Structures are given as structure tokens and as C-alpha cells.
Image (cartoon, rainbow, N blue to C red; front, side):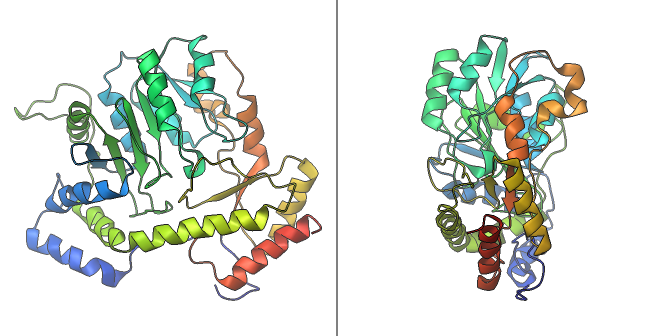
Length: 371
């Protein structure tokens, strides 16, 4: 990968090496406990609290098998009437909408802000005039911070629960009463463990319900009261998580520095529009927007010619996926979301990039815009 003429991959997962895992795997051998809320899982849920902004000792973090499972569990824990409408942005990964369906609800697809590329309280308010919305799932688009204070005020005014799909915003997104967050620990995320998810909430009642729902809905009497799942995090995944925590502080700083470096490098290029951020991000992707079709296609062909990978994420938007067609009502057209799905592409961004590769990447982008 240090070969300047070689391919520059879009993303390389950054997970612990074998030597870092061995002490934690040895603990599993000693404990002879492999799943069902084992000791490593419980220890991780406590240890990871320090990495989620605004979480205090009395707040709750529950682990599960994936970020999608986290969303589904949290939605189901709300115990909304079956068929309730849940507002989600159309510009997001398909898992957001599928979690709503799998929880027994109907997704309503909202447009997003043209600058932050995210669902905001002011946009959500417009949809409340059109539909009887029971909950809202704003997305931390590309790991960008959602304004918790603004959503808390919105929740207090409307009495609606807010669940952040913070899949890519671990260590960035905070929570508040009635404003919860779900994180993904997938291998491609900044804090990746292979596969896993986290739910962060101030509510002990919801945390306990999520935990029950992740293990067949079984309560202390051994009875299951409602449809539920087997979405628990295994001790082996918890072992990876513990090893990941050992180096996370350094990795987090490196990702923040790299993101800031990208923004400085791209700022002089007028054709490149960067996502508006309210604070630093630790995402494992870097999106850029090029509105002009010819310039965008020229950039893509120039990157391809130099063997540099890129990708359009969230394309198509959720309201374009056939799986959702039977559940969709006519409403406000997600125009901005549709445009973003075509105009935004992600360029290589990860800690495995060498200085030579970074230089090549930005030279190539500059070349595409005749700079």
C-alpha cells in the first residue's frame, strides 16, 4: 500500500491485531462464558460510557449484535402502536428504514438540510403538519453531530421520542432525556469490532426493556411477553471491543486530525462543497459534494484513471428502494435528498493511508479541477 502507483482503497477497517486480542480471549477461556450478557460484555458496557459525550454513571448503555439491531430494539422498546408512523430522512443507509419496518412501524421519508445533509427539527416540523408522526429518527449523516439541545426542545414541545441513528457518530453524539442514540460497531466504522451495536439512553426503563428484547423478551419469571429477538453481543465481540478501547484515544485524535487536514486541502477548490459541521467528527468516511454534473463525472473518471476508489453512499435514497413502495404515502418530495445521492461521493479516508497516497489523492483531485 505504500506503492504510489498502486490502488488507493476507499476504506480499510482498523481493528485490533491478534496480539492485542490474546489477553481478552484468555479471559474468555478462564471464564468459560461466551454469550448471554457475559462478564466481558458487562464490563465493556460500563467502560464505553466514558467515550460517549454527556453520558454519566446513572445513564445506560446496552450492547447488541449490530447497529441495525440497536435501532430496531430501541424503536420496539418504545412500544408504539403497531403501524405507527416514524419519520426518518430519506438520505441515509437502508438499515434506518428497515429497522422501522422490522419494529412494526411505517417509515415516513423526510427531506434533509441542504448544508448539513441531515434531518433537522425545523424540517421535521413540516412533516408533523402532514402526518401523525409517533417518533423521529434523525441520522448523524456521515458521522456529523446532531444538535441534541435543539432536538430536546423539539421533543419537549411535541412529546415525541427522538432516536438518533448515530451509526457513524460514536464518541461524537450525546443524548438527553427522551433523546436516545444508537451506534454501530461494524468493522467499517471508526470504532469497529467486526459487528455490534450500542444503545445509549437516560431511561432505565427503556434500557431494561431493550436488554429483554435482545434476549427473546424473557423476564425474570422466564416468560416472554412480546415478539422479540436474539440480538445479544457475544463475549468474543466484547473481547475485540476491549482491545479496541486500549488504543481508541490515540486513533480518535488521529481521525479528527485527518478530517481537519482533508478540509484544509479541499477548501480552496470552489467546486467542492463540504458538509456543514457544528463540531469535529470522527467518521471513517469523507464526503464531498460536486453539484456540476460534468465536473463530477470528470472527477470520477480522473480518480478511476489513477486507481483511486470512491463511492456514492445512500444512493438511491430510501424512498427509491422498492422494499418501501408498499408503505409509502404521497407527501413532501425529498428533493434535496435525491440531489445529494447523486452529487455527493466519498473519497479514500482511513488511517492506513501513507503520506505518498495522501499527496497523490489531493494532486489527483486538484488535477480534475484544473488546479
